[in-house]
Length: 334
Ligand code: NAP
Ligand code: F7E
Image (cartoon, rainbow, N blue to C red; front, side, top):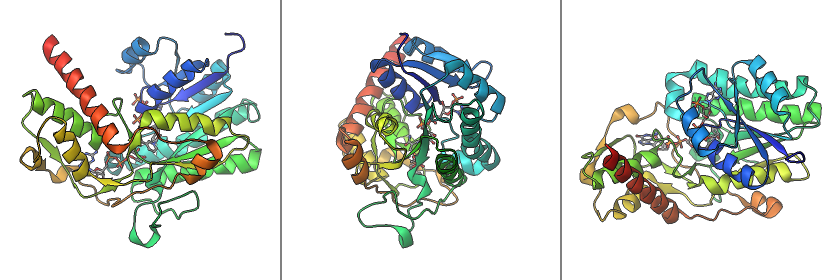
């Protein structure tokens, strides 16, 4: 392992952190993961699933811990995936969201710079399609690309926009290799159950097994450009292998409503009409909504040779199949 590339992943316990750790390990990297808290409940799962990852305790809001993490791992590549990432939660906790999702990015960049690694460590910043906002006046027909206007619609989106611009600023000011991936929604079997796709597939599996009667959701009309997380982390890695640091949109180029997601998910368990199983609950509605997101991944496809592999029906199917097996196993143990 003496010559292996070293990568530090913040957000190792999250969806993308897991997919990325697996990918980098497969590519021969020595992988380090920043883990938050004295006794993070997800530590055990990370250790069991990814025993090859060296965990380093730290927090995005604690600059000293980030300096230490960078010194301990001395990374060739740093993937900054950590964030308060739930849009609904960000409305309830906007100050914490700003501290972690906005200022946390600055703390990471500073840790790289002040430890003298500005020219040694390539940084990936997890920017997001939530920066666009989905409003009529700035919605391009062919989808948002790297030059589209930003109009974030949540404390999360606003915080991410700060992270995006401070990352670009460090690229321009200190000649750092900082790439920003403007990623549209990506889902899968590792997605947290607080996000709508996994909430649905988790509930569909439990309804099929007689473990719950229905599912409570907010608005069903919003549309998202939903891809598979496994495909998207491959795009993150490609951004850091490119000759120049740049911004890239990763998306599928298709948009679908939550209703369409429900139709495909319930069809997987042989139910054609999902309406009797869905209860609308205003608690899951947001003060401001992003109506529709559609991305244009042309630049990533042409410059990085990236292309998503899993399509929308394939994504729904793999998530429902995973949750059916997972819930059946848990029910058997209980
Ligand atoms: P996720 O599953 O919510 O994971 C977020 C990670 O951030 C978790 O590991 C969490 O760790 C960590 N974290 C939260 N607060 C922290 C803090 N103060 N210090 C250190 N770590 C902290 O998110 P994801 O879906 O993997 O997304 C990865 C990144 O891409 C995020 O920045 C997200 O905003 C962005 N993004 C996601 C999507 C998407 O569709 N998934 C699209 C565009 C951009 P704990 O275990 O400690 O909570
Ligand atoms: O909501 C609606 C909700 O929370 C999708 C994050 O990874 O992607 C994600 O943000 C849509 C919204 O994802 C429920 O109002 C209805 O219109 O799954 P979500 P998101 O807000 O698109 C972006 C790109 C990120 O960067 C974020 O980090 O679904 N919706 N009913 C619901 N959403 C949730 N969570 N729960 C419901 O019950």
